[in-house]
Every structure is written in C-alpha cells, then in structure tokens.
Image (tube, one colour):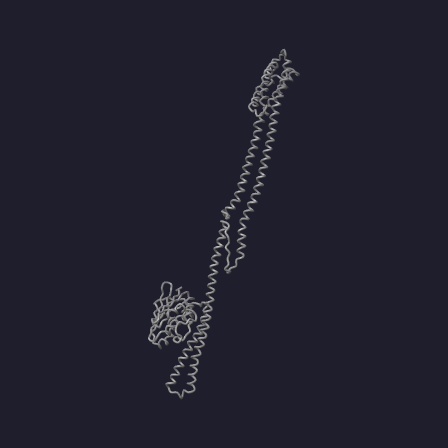
Length: 501
C-alpha cells in the first residue's frame, strides 16, 4: 500500500503533533493555575474578611470590658469617655453578615446581632453612669451583666472565627490538591509527549530509511552494461517514490542504450570483418596485378636486351610500348600501396593554414595536365572571384582535389570534358567536380566511399579503390561532407563542402 504523504508532510506532522501536545500541556497548566488563583482568591474573599471583622469586634468589646473593669476597681474618675458606644461594632457585624459563606455562620451572626442590642443598651447605661459619676441603684448588677454578656459575645465571636479558620484550612487543602493534580497532569503529559515524539520519530525514520536502504541495496547490485536491470517496486508517493520511478526510467533507457550499443558493436564487428576480408581480397588482387605487368615487363626488357639488334623496328617499337604500359600499370598499383599508408595516417587531424583556394587548384592541376592533354580532355576550372582565404590542411586537402580530378581524367574518354567549380554560399565553401565519363552503376553508389570498394571494371581502371575513402576522411576532418551523383553514359559529379570558419 502506498503512503499518501510526502517527506515534507511527514516531517511537518512529526513537528506538529508534539507541538499540539505541548499546547495541550500549556492549556491544562493555565487552567490549573487559574483554579489555584481562584482558590486563593476564595480564601481571601470568603473567609478572611469575616475573620478580620470578627477580630475587630472582639478587640472593641475587650477594650470596653477593660474600661469598665478598670472603672470599677480604680474609680470612676480615671477613664471618662473611653467606652465605645457600638457604632464601629455594628459596622463590623454588618461586614460579617454580608460575607456569610459557611454552614452555621448565619446562626452565630444572628445571635451576635441579638446580643449586640442588649450589649448596646447596657453599654449606654454604663456610659452615662461613668459620665455623670452617679452610683445608680443596681449598678453592680449591671456591671456583672455587662461582663457576662461581653464574655458570651466574645465566645460567639471566637466560634465565628473558628468556623472561618476551618474553612480556610479546607480551602488550603483543596489548593494543595489542585496544585498536586496540576503537577501530576503536567509531568504525565510531558512524559507522554516525550514517548510520542520518540515513537513517532522512530517510526518516521524507519519509514524513510527502509525504502532508501532497499533502493541502495538494489542499486549496488546493478552492473553497468550487463543489459539486466531491475524494475524497482514503487511503494510510496513521496520523493523517494519519485526517485525510484526515475531510476526505473533510467534503467529502461539503459536497456535500450545497451541494446543499441550491442547492435552497434555487432555492426562494427561485421564491418571490421568485411573490411578485413576486403583488404585480404585487395592484397590478393594487388599481388596478382603486380605479377602480370612485372612478368610482361620482364619478358619485354629481356627480349630487347638479348635480341634488339635482330628484331625489326616495328617489333622493337611494339615491345617498348608494352614496356611503357606495364610501367604505368605498376606505377598505379604502387600508388595504391601508398594510399593504404595515407588511409592509416588519417586518424589525427592535421594543422590548418589560411590559403588561397585558386592557388591550391593550380598547384594540384600541374601534375595532371599532361594526362589530360594526352587524352585531349578539356579542363574547365571555374572559381568564383574574390573568395577569401580558407583554413585547410595544406598537406591533405590538395590530395582530395587531385584524387577527384585524377579519377575524372581516368574515367573520361578522349576529347571529354571535366569541370571543377568553387563557390561560397553563406558560411560554406562548395566544390563540384563533374565529368562526361562513363558513369558509375547505381548499385555501387551506396558503398563508393568505403575502403577497398571496387566500383568499375578493373581492366579499365587499373586500380583497386582506396582514393575515395581517403577523400571522405579528409573532407569530414575539415567538418564537411561529400556526395556523388552519377548515371551510366552521362558522367559523374562529386560535390563536397567544408565550413568557411
């Protein structure tokens, strides 16, 4: 089953998931801290106000009690106007009443308000007694009642404080529980996040490394040029799957390339074998052709040497003509051997020079003019005026012109015509060599530039055929190409071009 996420998406998910967990931890900590804050706030708002107000009431009541006691034992003239008439006490009682939060607190406050009414009336009477310094009837009983009521009042106040203190203790315990719970949640979630990150990272690294390891293992077993390439299964739709698909495409191309290389190698081997066979035939034919004129030449020279004085002039003349023909045939065959050496030396391009093409043509024609005159062949050299100098190999390129013109003279009958034209079109020089000779059969044209190709009657040409192969090599080394057009009885035209630069 193929995964539907890219590596980029997988890495993003690995980062996103722990981030979400951390955000959850932060959110829960925020809630717990808020709960702790509310708990502390409740402690202050619900209980601390009541306790503080009760303590203020108790302090005022104790001050009044102490004033009365000191007045009884030390005399009425000592503490005049020191009694609190109850205004502040009522204010603090109202604070307690407005902040009732615990069970039983309301009952105590109701009792305090009831006792406060009695306390206020009794306190007013005692205050007047102290101010007027009168010893009213029953004052001793009033002092006793005031002390007893004060003690009862303080006892209720202490009970109210105790209830709120217990509530504060319980709230403190709740706060500790909330803090402990928050700490436990935070540590637990952090541990879960760490475990999740470790597991998810291990899972992702395994998912990423497994196809890469499989791909590397398969690639390590591939041998270049073997022709046997694997088809790797694509198991993911991410970058690794894309890489695997590209390797499969590369292997398909390598299969085609190896097949083409194999076919090309087979063709080259066949070509080499054919060339070797042609070369063997060439050497055999050359040996045979060398033997025939040499035998004839040897016999003619021998007869002339031994019996020249006894022979009639016509016979001597005929033997001399035969000797001349045999010598010419031997010269042509020797030139064929020289051509083999030239062909083997064509592997490295020669040095080029800037030369005038018209001068090169005239130099090439010099050794051929006598042959053309002997056969009364008209040579027409047509070079476009004002052609700039051309960069050519001064040793090899003239041989191309000489070979083409020499073949044209050889295969053109008496009183024939040969035309050699040079033109420049755009960035190319075009060379056209045409004759009015016998022409070449169409079946020989496709192989005319191959080595050791024989494309005409041996008896007529007197050659085996390496010149055109050398011509093609030189033209291609100059960056150009050559073609031939011919028709039996209408002559042959060779056209080749080389770049001007």
